[in-house]
Amino acid sequence: MSVAQANPGDKERDAQRVADAQRAQQQQRQFELRADDNRRRLESQQAQQEQNAQSADAARRGSGSRMTPDERRDLRRQINEAGSDIYRNAPRR
Picture 1 (cartoon, rainbow, N blue to C red):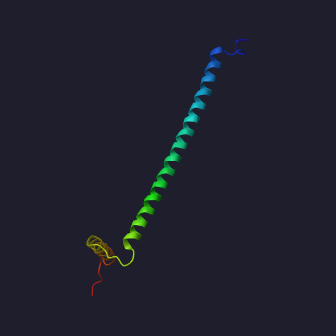
Picture 2: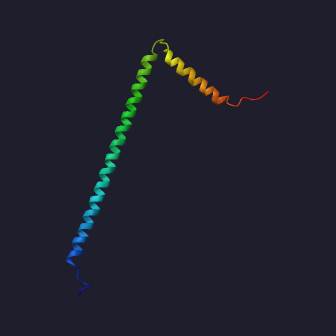
């Protein structure tokens, strides 16, 4: 008879376990929602920055504008770096 009857403490422990499991699931859902919101916000910010950069570049490059000395220097440096990568080991004659 003692085996068939459950202790009152067992029911309370089971109820506590269920409540803990539900709380953990709710916290996981909240964490996932916050992560999704942060990801969307970051993607939106990146898209906005790209659009702003393109707009600024288009405005700067509009109707026959010239490159600034800094831009020319950067472009020359990039070309030289790319050339040194391409021709790193020059063929011997």
